[in-house]
Image (cartoon, rainbow, N blue to C red; front, side, top):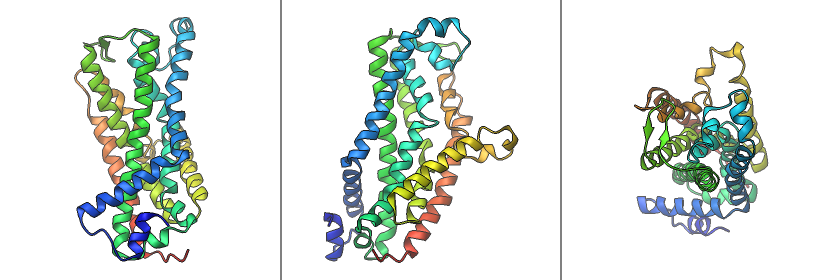
Length: 290
C-alpha cells in the first residue's frame, strides 16, 4: 500500500494547505519515478537531437528546395531557432501523446492497482486528490516541454552558430532576449496542454483500466487533430483545443502579438472548466469497490 494511502486508511487525511502539498509531493514522486515517464521524457529529449542532425545533414536541401516551416529554415543561421523548431514539430503529436498517457493513467491507473479505494476513503478527500492529480499532470507538461526545449538548446549550440536572433517580423534581438522568449514560449506551450490534461483526467475517471484510459485519451488527440485539418469543418475548428496551439509563434515578433496566445489560453481554460467539472462530478460520486 502506498504511504499516502496508508495514512488515509489510518484516518490521517490532509485538511490544510500543507496537507495538500504533501499529497502533491506524493503524486509528483509517483509520476516521475515511473519508468514509463522517464522513457517518455527521454524520447522527447531525443526528438530535437534527431531534428538537429537532419537539418545539419540536409542544409543544402533546406536552402535550395521549397520552403518548409520558417523555424526550420532559420535553424542553420542560429542554433537557438532549433528550440522553436523542435517545439513546433513536437506540439501537434509527440507532446500531446505523452501528456495523454500520463493524464489518462492518473486515476484509472490507481483503480487498476487497487490503491484508489484507499485514497478515496473519505468523500471530502476526493476534490483534493483530483486537484493534486491535475497539478502533477501539469508538472509533467512543464517537464515534457522543458525536455524538448533544453535538448534543442544544447543540440543547437553544438551544431549551429549561436548569437543574436532575427525574429519572424524581421527585427533582431540579442541572445539574452532570445533566451527569455524561449522560456516564455515553453511556459505558454505547457499551459496550452491544460485542456488536454483535463480531458485525460475525465476519461481516467470513467474506467478502471489504465491502458484503456491512456488509449482513449491519445485516440481523442489524434481524432481532434484530424478534425482540425478538414476544410469542411472550419465552423467548429476554432473551438477545438488543438486549433490555436501554434499561436506561440506570434511571440517571435516585435512587438509580441498576444491576441492568438490569449485566445488559446482562454480556450484551454474553458476546456479545463468543463472537463475538470465533469471529472470532479464523476470522481466524487463514484462508488469505488476495487
